[in-house]
Picture 1 (tube, one colour):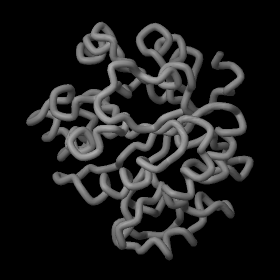
Picture 2 (cartoon, rainbow, N blue to C red):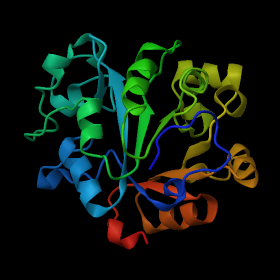
Picture 3 (cartoon, rainbow, N blue to C red):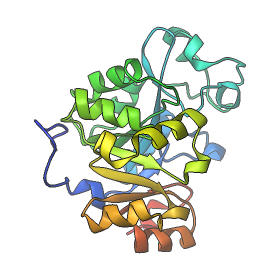
Picture 4 (tube, helix red, strand yellow):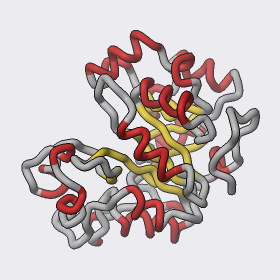
Length: 253
């Protein structure tokens, strides 16, 4: 499947609405498969579902896969990820397992045959270095891929600098957003600034007027994070695809 276009597409690829995404990979910590690990991404690919994952920037400018800036919970190291070089990060074991923190390039390498959503974890007031590091990898990735972010500045960066990469606006109630991102939403809005191709929205808030309007306009919507049968029912009523965890992929058809 093509991963990039010369400009904004008029039709979305079918995988966007057909293939569910495993939240931070298909993880099961009790079985030694932690979230955002290569093992979790391999498990997703083996199950025939896609993967959602999180990207941050190391101290030396390498895109790595991690949800939190604070490494304490994931690695037991009381450090900020942005202050650690990649050579050290990739030696850190995740959640008490032997799995190690991967680079984004490593993660994409095991997710060639299934869709990947890379969530750009930029909670800051500026965009550029992280987005560029992600874009450099996505534009040459041979499989189906997309980028998304809570921060409209990040989505806009891709609209302006890598328009061929499929991009989505992630969201929830504005009050739940980080302060800087909340300010960006107030200043720029969501739809106009980044011109997203699709939306990725909290399953508990699919009745948000922005999401209702987006679907009425023909824009696909992912629901996150779907963990229960009740979540799945809400997602099927108010969204076009899901980002899930806990649930068995075989039960999603």
